[in-house]
Image 1 (tube, rainbow, N blue to C red):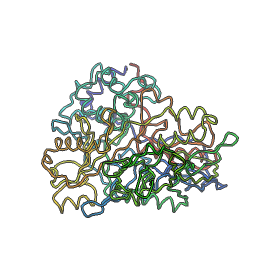
Image 2: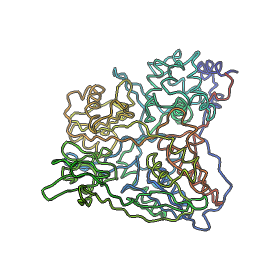
Image 3: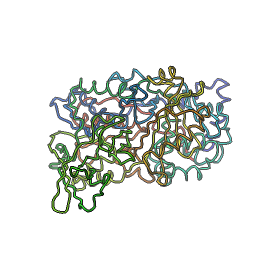
Image 4: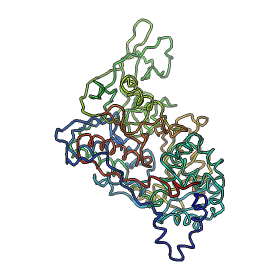
Length: 623
């Protein structure tokens, strides 16, 4: 049967179910898959106690470190920030007289995040996951459509969506629609051969998917990849849709965090790593990889000492001026300099109207560099400055050491990974790997704004919404409905706490660090009319650009976990995996897979890895 014919027949299959053919249809169900092992090792632990250096303290690095330590490896985990977590990091802040948890933004723990859930369970870090009743899409005109966690076989899952949706009909997905056929026919090779050369917006148009299906599902879900659809590869959109919608038996079931992530997730993960004997080197920069005889033999840690110079005539009489990685100003006592690295997690600090601000986590400093708000634990670091002739010389301290290792896992975000590659002269040691690393980029910046209102949200609202039709807003999370202590604060104050997300801010809209706040607030008031006149008691605004770009034509350029250096491995949501996974699940999966490669080389039993179906329901059928 041709694929197009089967598509039409499948979308009419509800009659079969009514006639008692549901058992037959279960043959189409995509159950959880077990990823094939790389080797046949059976040793419970490495007999030689080999040392592995893992760079990056996010989920990928922590997963790799824990998996290896469980199997007897000595592991050192190096993280530039002062705390673990990466994009999952969290911290306490003082708001309205209370200490409350803050984080980068809402995280949905989907049911098909199999490897993430295994990792969390092993560490006892899954105790505060709160199941959510539905995944809800909110339209600009106020309509809401909720997707439950249907666990039905194909094509019953798609029929269930059509049945429950007031916007979607059979006519919107059936017929001669090459885009719909592509979505249902995901193949890890053919999909990228056919669709990686165009962007997702073009795919929607040329695939004849414009209309309710695109507005309800494709655009909101595609944007949730943290990539704008004009930059997102069409093949990645198909893969994303397969992973979250049709390629797993879990539907769209997901959990939210009932307690801040630094308390519920990161604290038990850190304790788990320490119990396993992992050496944690937080607040330490891994600058480069050391190579000998075609192998990685360790790392170089620490900053390079360097001087930054500026002509005295260029220093203004008042205010600060940026000089290299520092800020400099005149004072009655002479020249004063402060490091531009935030004392919280090392992000770059920016000048603001009345001092300095760290856009990553809304850390705030006054005009003298003293920490006055947000998570920074201490003032901006002082930098030694001297006058040499007609110049001011800022002396940035450096501290260098080496760390020997039998294997190295680079589990960082794309930006730091590219910096390590450059500092390591990687083009000389691994030109193919270096080209892959340099080809991958970052998605557009994203913004997170959390608002404290004096007015409650409507009682029947769900905790989380994907939003369709707004210029900036992509999702809304009502923290006062699912996370302590926000629930208690709302009950006591009669107010609410709502977080707005702008996932991919286009270049023409990027500007001041606080620019997203006013736009997101206005769109939030429009989306939730009950907050139209509510008073904002407090707000926290953060902007970052650390999510992976899944750009057009980039799939073949990505590096897999293993590299041309036999003992150097990559991990992170940017690496090429042979099975579908995204975001947190991709990070953990790649970290455990990196550990599996090391185990396979040493004859050690590998960790179990799980995945959704590797192919779509109609893949392999003739068109």
